[in-house]
Image 1 (cartoon, rainbow, N blue to C red):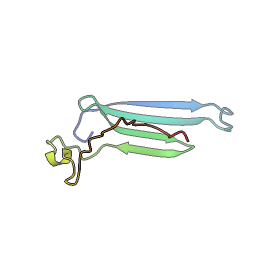
Image 2: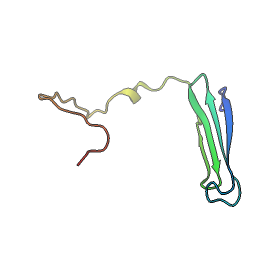
Image 3: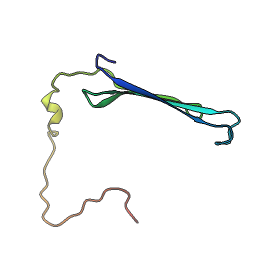
Image 4: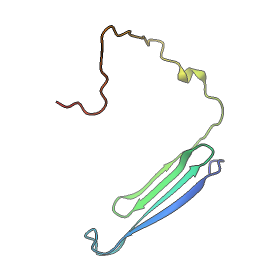
Amino acid sequence: MEGVLAEGTRTSTTWPIGSQGNDRPIVAVVESWKSPELQVRMLIKTFDPRSGEHVVRLTNISRSTPDSSLFQPPADYTVVEEKEDFMIRYGPIPW
């Protein structure tokens, strides 16, 4: 896949008649391909008749060394030294 060795799985889940208010069985399928070498998902394809088909695919893979400028802060970046204690919160702010 894209020139990279990948291992895949395909899983089908069937919901029987009446379990979701359905008059026929519902079959959802998930196909997933992962590169053991790169440790990333190369392809994730899902199909569910309730929501349709969704595909996420890794393309244009380059193994060359990235340009070092990608890892530099912008020219107008400044460092601010905090003079007092401060707190960093993550997640929703409780009002």
